[in-house]
Length: 183
Image (cartoon, rainbow, N blue to C red; front, side):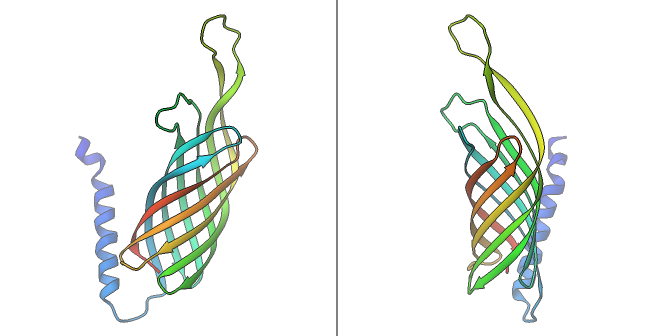
């Protein structure tokens, strides 16, 4: 049962890798690019620091980029933190190329969700307990991404991202591995 769970993901990764290798060997110019990225990083809210997982699917034609991204932030290892935050966003932007280095500027619309500490519960115990507040809100995701695509179909990316929303805005940075038909 567990192997079926990851079957589609494995097939998708193999198809993208084979497609990227096939495009790399082609001599004809191809105006479309499709790649996936995933990585780890840190993110900050106004009162806490979190580690994060980053994943995205990217499509580019000429200098235009369309990105579907997901970010999940949680406690930094070794802390007693209970706060979580993350977003799923659809971003659009522009890409500039400098040889094997690419710089993208993106903004879009997203859904942000998380949990943060509210007021202190009046519990007369030795431990301070906070009321945890769950939230979901529409947001404005932002991102600047610097890619190094020298070893196509693989690449490295450094993403500086932000999320502006009514509940708990955040910003962060992530180091990602790229796979696919890179620009």
